[in-house]
Image (cartoon, rainbow, N blue to C red; front, side, top):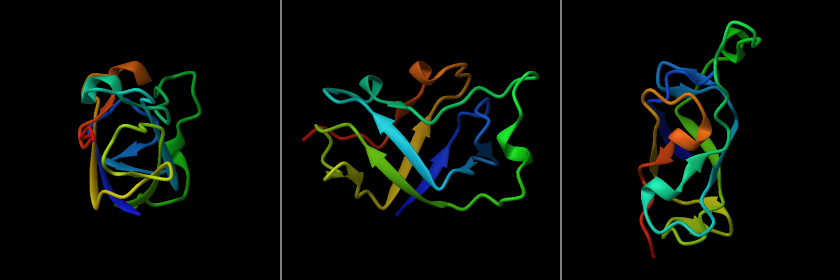
Length: 106
């Protein structure tokens, strides 16, 4: 598990920059740079969406991260091996506007 910090405040899974999901999916199969990755688990929080953060679970900093960015040095059998991961998405309104800031090309 990795320590996950996320600044995609508009995501329905974000609670105080932590994720409420037990597992997060990062994608970017042929990523050459951070901007080529994204958080596939991003879900826009909205008035018509049953807000995930209303669940009775508490966010934890440790999160399992599935990684589709095969070109990242931290990708070990499609799991993230980085001790800490930052997902950027300040102002994001969809997953394409997020990225894994920890991505480091092999």
